[in-house]
Length: 147
Image 1 (cartoon, rainbow, N blue to C red):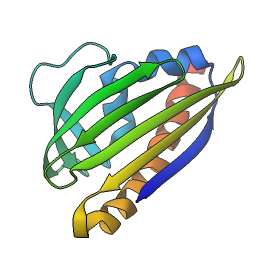
Image 2 (tube, one colour; image 1 turned 135 degrees about the vertical axis):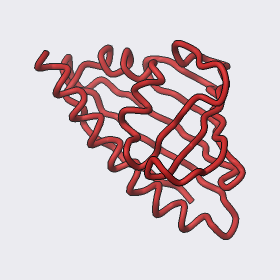
Image 3 (cartoon, rainbow, N blue to C red; image 1 turned 60 degrees about the horizontal axis):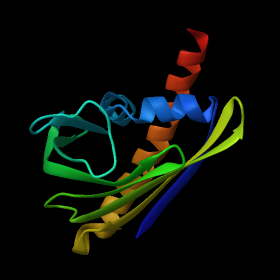
């Protein structure tokens, strides 16, 4: 099943890209639906070919195992990662970034989910999660612009 969400972000492509490169941004926009704690050495920035593992907790409290993220492609036009954990073996996440003008960026999350009989339940959670994430992104970018 596929979740796809698109939003117009109130920031330049360069600003969005600089924030998306930092793992701490993932933790910030995911909360409280999910929390990610490094399960090993955390790299400073996301980059092509990097792989990292996280202790994933749903709603910040329910342990959901180790979630591994492998970055296939990372650049100003978007990111492609292959992710998964023991509950959801396939979580293929593609982010597309498109410059609308100098102060707006179109941002799309597209996630392919395969989790056996749990797929529909994971899809329902992911649909809410990505809508939440994009709302948090917009708030983060609005706060950044005010500073």
